[in-house]
Image (cartoon, rainbow, N blue to C red; front, side):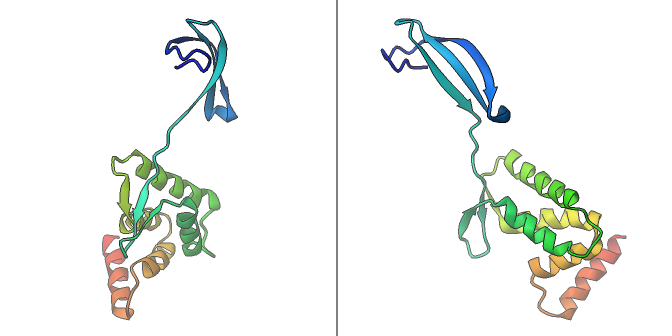
Length: 151
């Protein structure tokens, strides 16, 4: 770490403690050359996940959009907010842990439907009907037949 006083590039850590509920680490350092002390903060660098939408536009992944979509699908269903929050966290974690910095919106939608299929079939069909933009009753019935065939 470069000393802000003399510019020397070596220092030693004197004290280290977490701040901001463990999100950052505060370090007291001492320059080896001039012996002056200074403070640095260490934070985890987060690289945003970019979502490529159907129209090829790009935007940063927004957790609240996914949450709201799942919430709408689960409306008036016996699905707790904790369950929805857990699904959103699982999907976000999978996106962050993947090596891809860009993912398609269709991939996120498929992940959400995979989770919903196991949680509540009615919520799954609701989400799929909006997500897959069913054009008519036949495509809707085909999705229901596929769901019934998996049982």
